[in-house]
Length: 240
Image 1 (cartoon, helix red, strand yellow):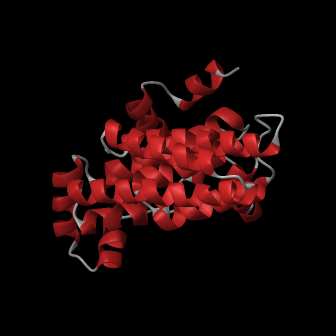
Image 2 (cartoon, rainbow, N blue to C red; image 1 turned 135 degrees about the vertical axis):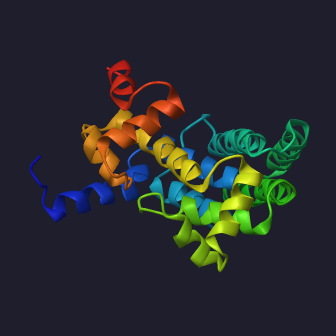
C-alpha cells in the first residue's frame, strides 16, 4: 500500500482532536465520558468547549425559560452518566431533582447558565466518591492516563512509569480491580471512541486504525468485532 505523507496523518490526528467542535452531540458525548471516568479537569474543559461552541438551543419562546430548559436537560444526561459510572440511580436522580429545583428558583439567565458548571461538579463529586469505593487511587490514575492518550500507542510500561509503579504490580492490580488486562482496557476505549469516525467520516478503516495507534487494520477489526459483535465496515454500511 502506498505510504501516505506525514501531513496526511497529521491531518487525521487534527480531525480527532477537533471533531467534537463539529457537532454538539459529540461534545456532549465527550463530556459524558469524562464524567463516567471521574475526570474533573477534562469534564470542566468539555463544558467550556460546549459553551464556546455557540448559543444554546432555543427550547422556549422566553429566553430565561429556554436557558432553564437547556440546563435541566444537562442535569438529565449528567445523572445518566453518573449512573453509568456506578452511582446508585436514586442518588443520581435525587441530585438531579435538587439541581432542577434550584434552577427553577433562579431569575437571571447568567446565573442559570453559570449553575450548569456547579451542577457538573456536584455530579462529579458523586462519581469520584463511587470510583474511590470501586477502584484504588493507582487504578483511577491509570484510567485517567489512558483516556487522555487514546491516539498514542500506550503500553503497560508507559503507564507504570507515569505512576512510578512496577509494571507487573500494576498489571496485577489493574486486572484484579477492573476484570480486564491493561491492553484489553486500552483497546476497548480506543475502539469505543473510533466509532464516531466509522459512522461519520469517509476515512478508510485502515486510516482510522492508524489514527488510534493500532499495529494494523486486521488487529483493529478483530478488537472492534470483539467489542461490538460486528466489524467497523458492517457498522458503517448499516448507517448508509
